[in-house]
Amino acid sequence: MAGFLDRAKEQAQRGLVQGKQKLDEVQTQRAGSDLLKKLGAAYYAERRGSGSPAATQQAVQALEAHIATHGDGVLRS
Image (cartoon, rainbow, N blue to C red; front, side, top):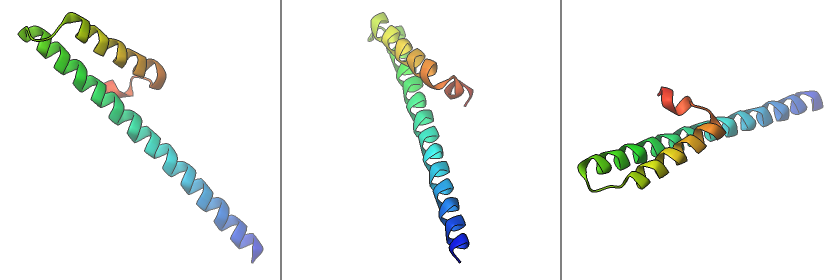
């Protein structure tokens, strides 16, 4: 009986770890998507004359920092 409970506990812990990893992946993807959206908005505003090149460059740098940390998976969606 104890062996069964140990295996069940181990399986539950693996499930929790896998769930946390998936949640982290989703949050990272969402953050990357938000950065892409901000870059698009900054570029659009710059092209329309209501934004600045500095704001666009800041958005590019934020996206590049995210990619350097988490990889370029956000660009493939």
